[in-house]
Amino acid sequence: MNQAPEDAGAKSEPRRTASDATDFALGLDVESWGDPEDPIVLLIGAPERLSGDWRRSVRALVEAGRHVMLTADFDEADDGSAALRRLLTELPSRPAIVCSDTTLAAVVPALSVTGPALASCLAVVAEGQGAVSPELEAQLAGVPIQTIAHAEAPDAVEAENAALLGFLERHAPRDALYYQAGSDPRTLRDALGCFATGVTVVTTLDEAGQPVGLTANSFSSVSLDPPLILFCLARSSTNVDRFRRAEHFAINVLHIGQQPTSGVFARSQADRFQDVAWETWDTGAPILSGALASFECGTEQIVEAGDHLVIIGRVRRARFEPRRDPLLYFRGKYRRLHFS
Image (tube, rainbow, N blue to C red; front, top):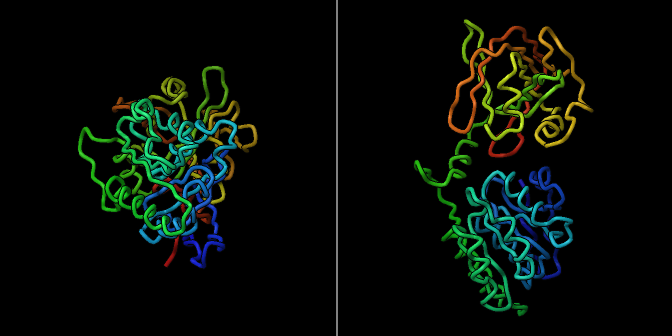
């Protein structure tokens, strides 16, 4: 668990701890405080612009049951808006965002999406009350926005914190969240993320005989007789047509030491196999060397299911290593087994 900042006056420094989100930040240096299981409050920009005594503000948020994350180098990022959008997409839950009026113009493009909102709400710390123009508000349709008055005076910090916490309680409550058919799909995604899974790399060969692979956690056994397994592939995947046409594929279950491999196959890059050891068996589908378990399959059936394909395979050959622990994924983060 990350630690709350020390409360020893304005000169004390919060205890800084690395956040799991730094794995995904891709250009943004992320620090965090508080319990990672609590709702996320993402502070964007130089902290002194967010509060006259930002250490006290961080502590107030942590004590109110918030997981505080800070991207202080946002202004210096080569492409801040794009990096922020990638970070928001990969966070385990939709955060509340706090930024200053000086960074607002770069934050808004990251939040301007056609699909589900990437933030639960946005608080803008500003000298005046007119920081958010009607034009910017129009780009953030569906994201609640509030301007928080910023002042340097020590006695103004409490009022600033109270205004911020009140806004968060209204628009990013700590109560359990609910999804109903037709409402925000991000809430459904977060609920599904409460089911812990293993992590796999699914592989095949394209029509030119080149290896194809991607990270997936939607893997399940189906039947022992006949031996069937399945994985789900998003229709939006760049590899969907390759797997749709493939007669064979392999599923490689990763162990705890293969988290870097998971990252390689989750990112877009020209040759994901370049620095990964792999081999082939009967069908030519790539088998990752040293995986916890590997299953070589013939494509048995492809089922169209909403925005995904359910690809069912008949297992032709399998191999597993019984002395290693699995790489786990839960609520958007890698995990490991804990034994009692």
